[in-house]
Amino acid sequence: MIRHLVLSRLNEGVERDDSRVVRGGEAFRSLDGEIPEIRFWDCAWNISDRPIAYDFAIDPAFEDADALRRHVEHPKHQADVGLWREFATWVIADYEF
View 1 (cartoon, helix red, strand yellow):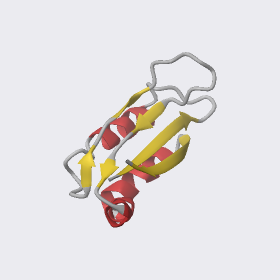
View 2: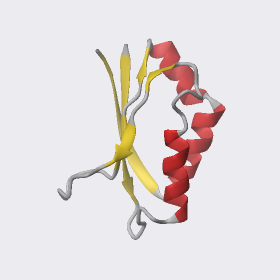
View 3: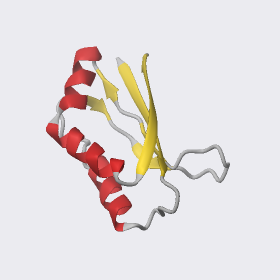
View 4: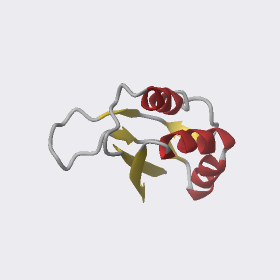
C-alpha cells in the first residue's frame, strides 16, 4: 500500500472563507468514492496554530504505484488540483506502508 500525503498552504492574503477555498475543500472531500483507485481517503483543515503548520492535509491510500498514478492522472483529480492552484501551494510525500 502507498500513502500519498499532501499538505497545502493557502497563499498570502487568502483565508479559509474565500469562496475558492470553500469550493476547493468541498471538491477534495468529494473525491472519496469518486475515484476507484482510492482505498482510503481522509482530509481536513489543520487545527494547530503553530507557524510551521500547513493549512490543509490530504491523506489517501492506494494499492500500489500504478493505482496512485491513475489517481493523479484522473480528470476529477486534475480538475480539483486546478482549483487549488488558484489559492494554495503544497508539498507531497508518497510512502509505502
